[in-house]
Amino acid sequence: MIDFGREGPVWVATINRPDKANSLTHEMLVALAEFMEDAQAARAVILTGTGKVFSAGADLDEARAGLAVSDIWERLSGAIAALPGLSLSLIHISEPTRPLYISYAVFGLKKKRGGGGGGGGGGGG
Image (cartoon, rainbow, N blue to C red; front, side, top):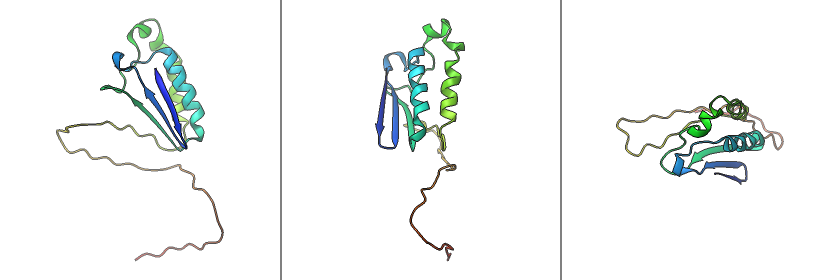
């Protein structure tokens, strides 16, 4: 119910349960948590969903059976928070009713050190 892919440094998890509004079961949450825990080496991680709805949240039957208070939510949240870099939440709006402004900041990304000598001091103009 979740498709996982790795294309070089870009890792993608696609929730694939559109018939149930991509609602999440315990099994799906465990798989997502494991994926996110392993994703420390990724340069980018994308979590998306198929169909019209990203995710309705917990599967209602499983939520009633205890998923709503399960520790798996904290495990998944912690795994996502531990990823190096920036987390963004992007929503597709097909016909916005007002202008949409998106701003972002990039921080915490490690630059690869390489090569030799280089003086810095950039100039300006």
